[in-house]
Amino acid sequence: MKRMKTKNILLVPFLVISVMLQPSCSKSFLEIEPKGAVIAKTTADYEELLNAISLGGSYAAGIYMGDEMAAQESYINTAALRTQRLFRYEDRVYDEDELPTETWYLSSVYVFNKVISEVMASANGSDQKKKTLLAEARVGRALCHFYFLNDYSKPYNAATASTDLGVPLLTAADVTRTQFVRATVQETYDFIIKDLTEALPDLGPLKHRRKFSRAAAEFLLGRVYLFMARFEDARTHIDAAFGEIAKSQIPLALYDYNVVLDPDASATWLPDLGYGLSNYPLAAVNQEVIYNVSMGNFQLQEANTFVFSPQTAALYKPSDKRLYMFTGYELFNPDGVFPRGMRRYSANLFFGIDIGPALPDLYLMRAELKARAGDLAGAVQDLEALRKKRMPAEAASVPSDVAGNKEALVRFILEERIREFATSGSRWMDMRRLSVDPVYNTTVKYTHELYDAQGNVVATYKLRPERFALKFGERMLAQNKGLVENP
Image (cartoon, rainbow, N blue to C red; front, top):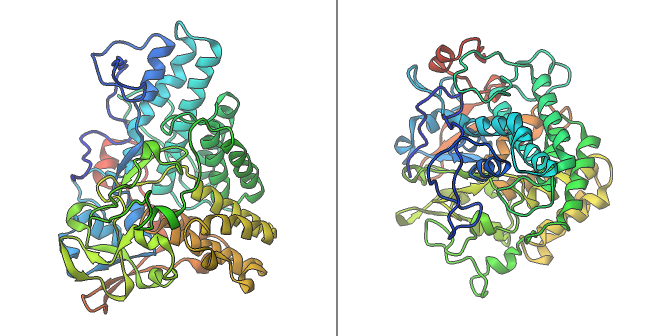
């Protein structure tokens, strides 16, 4: 598996031009092959432009920066220099002549902007169809800006958001643009919220995991407000997302890991062949996925380098079936065992993981919001609904001393998020928002450890608050005039 390479100015999305992808009779409408290129004119043309988008990338920075991660000394030198630097929380990730690969999400913004600016004037489509495509494009643009913001800005802090630097707002389908000015964090969040809010009325039920639905937009609005610590607003949209589940036109439900990770069950995903679970569902049919965003998480040459830490291992009960998503054995060396309970991701090594809107996150966000609001019984209900699908029923109950204490319950839910999403990059996004939380900032660990083969710590790397925002680098600044570097 090769690293995603960038050969253009990254703030200008890859040159897409107005391409209409002609459908093939043997393919579904979301699995079309290029049959030439024409200028998009009809509503159907713009729909096909949206259908051709597959959001995803490789090796997001957050995967290597989460505090649930550790690294193995024996393999660290085989890892890409970029990932080593990210793990060490270094200021410089790229050399002077390199462009960052973090902005994988911006390659789709050109198409989203093209649809937003042109679809309402397209031919041969109903007004409602045009509005729906416009709404889908707005959700896509909002999601891309949200990822952009979480890579290159400070975490949202209401006291400083109006002056903290966010990211440039990309609103034009113009690949020649080279001048960019960063909006503030507040302006960027307002832009994202506006896109999502205006999209809601014209979005339909979930029909395909690569088409934006109302469920996906409600999920994203809930997440955005959660990251802004606007918990009541977040709850409104998370509840609305749950309301959309019953309207889904494709299967949408939590998998029962007691079944799919039971080696003796007929529907098992096992065996683990060392590089993945043999029957792990593809994103297109993964019934937990609301909108598919695929992310490669480890390059093959560094599969043994990055593991979850001993502290993370201690969060799991031995009966927790999620441990089957990982392995304690080295790739290509079945006799090599990681020390102190550390494990590498194994469930779907070559195809990576899904980081888009999904049911497990929906349950955990609502549980956290209920707990923060004092609805402890409701929070426990949502939490146990997920846990019962991840471990035997007798192990799934929330401890009574936790269930009756608001702060303890919120902390338990935050730990559950680590158990559910370890090594996916999700923890890094949680660390960002929690680092400015006046009550729960102590749940963030600001160090990474490098371990030798016996499990001894041989190096420790400290995260400074400044590195919650990545640097753009010299070449990026030189090619995009007006862009201001992070400290």
